[in-house]
Length: 332
Image (cartoon, rainbow, N blue to C red):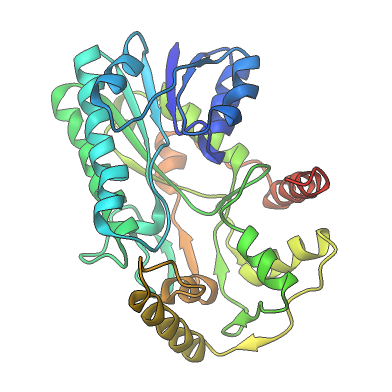
């Protein structure tokens, strides 16, 4: 099987491309940062550079491959709607069109459980529990792009969408770096009572899920899947574990959630008034993520993808911490 992995210069796309090569697949990669793809090329990947906003380039990328694992897109909680729509929705439309024109058999679309997040606590949320209104542009455009991908099944494309929660391991630059930086400055506080339980996903478990999605048949097709380690853990226990592994003091101070929410609202308001509307230091969504329970029901993935999250979160955290220490030692 030959596959294309988009967003391969990022954490998830890059780790899956390497995993796919290890499983004996032929892998073509595309990503924004050519230097980040050099290790994959050395392992045997075919690198095809270019901008995914160029439909002609996307058609070339999809030529001669059996499946596409689409990991590229915009992430975050701040920014104009049009930027998120272009990177998430329009780009996915281009991928789908190219798959259909080039005879690609399967599309595995990387979605996000951020589509569920509305600032409230959720425990064991299922794939069907999508809100009628979304908390931010990221959530709304990820769901819209997911619908674009799954809708292509009508035209014969085999499609599956995965919604992995808090993916971590070596290479993760999204979950812990800001918390680490805040603690080094002495500004990090536990938001709320510190007992909120959340889901994480080891990158190894996500790799297994993505690989299963490439091979799944029958009723597994045409569905979206929650992916996590399946064991919600108190968020602040995880944060303090990482801090200890990095020889940083644990978080001890607390801030009531209503106060944190108010401070974040003020921070957002100030950013709106600044030229260019830069991302604020604190956001209301960020405070909710740090204070609320949030876990997924992964029974659909267990049933249809034979998903069995065997890799431990603690091993993934150790992997991240070792990588982070090495990165710091190298002055990166």
